[in-house]
Image (cartoon, rainbow, N blue to C red):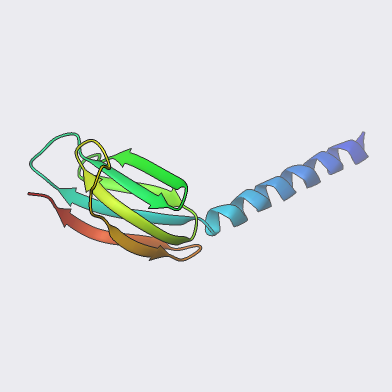
Length: 102
């Protein structure tokens, strides 16, 4: 019985360690959007990977893989929208600052 409990504690400790290590290596893109319009979306595209999130209280945040991402801000679709290319380093947070939309 004692050996089983010790094994369980060991396995749980290893799993917690893996999750903590992964959290330290997470890469993020964050920023703020200043716009008079409602329903503003932010898109991030890296090759075949694409993410989108709605601006909430003027802020946005993505968890991304390291690499080059095209970040675009718009109302609905990504069609023909110009974006900004950014390079995200593993384990870091890239703050894009405040983006002002007319």
